[in-house]
Figure 1 (cartoon, rainbow, N blue to C red):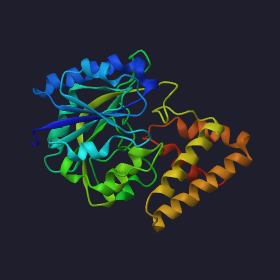
Figure 2 (cartoon, rainbow, N blue to C red; figure 1 turned 90 degrees about the vertical axis):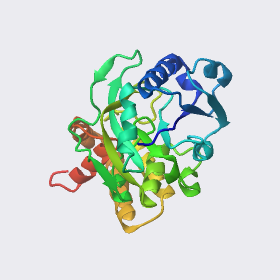
Figure 3 (cartoon, rainbow, N blue to C red; figure 1 turned 180 degrees about the vertical axis):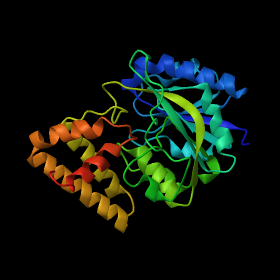
Figure 4 (cartoon, rainbow, N blue to C red; figure 1 turned 60 degrees about the vertical axis):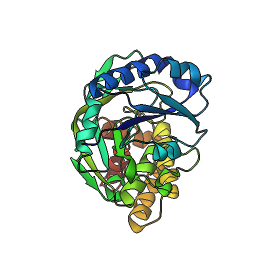
Length: 290
């Protein structure tokens, strides 16, 4: 089992109200781990990060990451076996130590998430429930039309990081999807660990969220995010097809939002990982009557 651990988090000002819960999650994880990890804080505009460092139960370092994601260079240079990711507005659970077991024979570990509201109240015990999330993942095609690897439910072997993988395009909203797609493209393997590894907070500042709005205008925003991601990834025939499907879906919704509104409510009211709803809507677009 890998032993030495670092936690990597991008810190930003909009999540300041959730900093105390973030610190409590780190404390719970440290207690379950039984040793103090190194903490890498990738500062993306958070004022006075030194104040945050004083509340953390482990040695931490702050690196500049304005618009650049997770501080990948510092993560790759860290003297550790494993990098555990956690978003600043979320909270690690003690179950995140399960990442270490999964990484015995994989490069990436991923686990389930509890959905919580702004006050920390549990909305759902499982984000993955009923979504058909696989127990292992190999090859970038598993992340072609949806994503289940985010920066709060994953950990990676540091040795699997490469300069190409950590070179996240500037200000890419779907940085996690790009990052893990690139890892899988480079040959990394992923394994699911048991149980929930973090609490995933749903609030107004969520870029994506576990419960996105089915309103046509909101779906169009997610279509644009998906198309921006594909433009940033290496081109291949499967991605070209996915781009065409979602571009056609966006055109159809924009032309007839009143027709698509009930269809979108229906496809969104089903279990799924991030962006599963776009894939379902694009499939419905090709069905009779749509």
